[in-house]
Image (cartoon, rainbow over all chains, first blue to last red; front, top):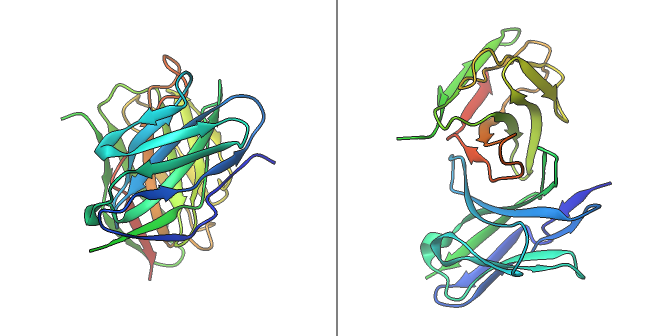
Length: 113
Length: 115
């Protein structure tokens, strides 16, 4: 079965430290990969995507993600965390030619001052 | 401003009632989606539509119905057959057929509570 895993329910980081939110996937073929962020009681906002090309993708608000095909991972990173980065982060995968997204369960990121 | 609008933000339903959640987009997107989000869980797809007058069931379509009579509108009806409808409902759209696998844009969500 095709799936996306976010192995950590919650990640705690001190403000100013680097952060990583992990995502691994299990799908056939070459997927498209996405990261979204959700603030409380709000919809999801798109952060970044990997379609093809450079494995390091830069996105909104200083976030970046690295695609690793051999490890089937797409971890979200930021060099220096802000308290305002505290939110719920979702990784998603779609198969080329397929409209449906396969979603991870989400990781709650807490940045402590 | 371009975007996707869901209404109402909060909705209360009595047992046995049907309710309809509104979703409108002015992004000229072909594809639209409805998701359900429960606490501690990811998004589960209810229905999606790739084009006007056509829609497909997602993973949890039972107890829900949709229509796509206009490109910009994709309302979701939660019927009395849905036994556990209390959840946060998210509508999304993407470019669709003219640019597959592009990112989705989300509305602000509707929180439905059964009273």
